[in-house]
Amino acid sequence: MKKSLIGFGVAGAAAVALLAGCGGNDMAGMQHGSTTTTAPASGQQADHNEQDVKFGQDMIAHHQQALDMAAMVPGKSTNPKVTDLGKRIAAAQDPEIKKMTEWLTKWGTAPASTSMPGMDHGSGHGSMPGMMTAEEMAKLNGATGAEFDRMWLDMMIKHHQGAVEMSKTEQEKGSNPDAKKLAQDIITAQQAEITEMQGLLK
Image 1 (cartoon, rainbow, N blue to C red):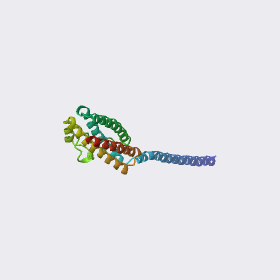
Image 2: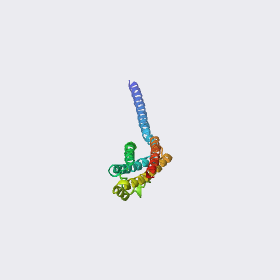
Image 3: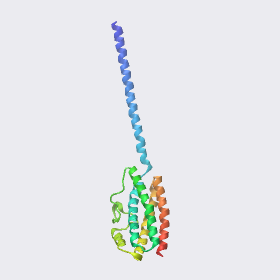
Image 4: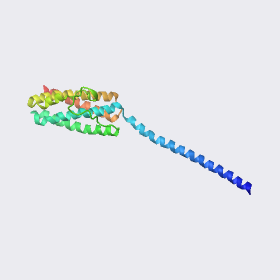
């Protein structure tokens, strides 16, 4: 009787040990599984790079200044063609700002707070081609009639040329397909507007 009880005790202990071993393996499997579930999260970062973020942040600020310039046109221009162009620029760039803001939010960042319209963007993060200084914006705001039209067209040509330059950099160094497509759209649209404005200046 004692022998059978001892035998049962040994068998029971072996079973407990076996179950514990299985439980340990299950836990290891669960931990391994949880590790693999986080892998796609890091993989999602591969859909963009630092250039894509910089393009979004800088172009939002660039577009915002263009909207400020377009907003001046109705009360100051005497040229219907300039007025029409100002409306078209605003209509095209406002949706692009919203689109880029959505991308930056998705990527875990946000538009740079230092890149405000009308700032002197001669240094720091806001250093961008084609941006007007605060003094230039104030001078433009103080002009009217033909003087305003001439000044506005000249400034907007430079502004567009800067946007084209920034977009070409995005195409060369960016990795996000949507951002690179937008860069191409900006190049195509703003090159055409540059040609149009050069014609108006003549």
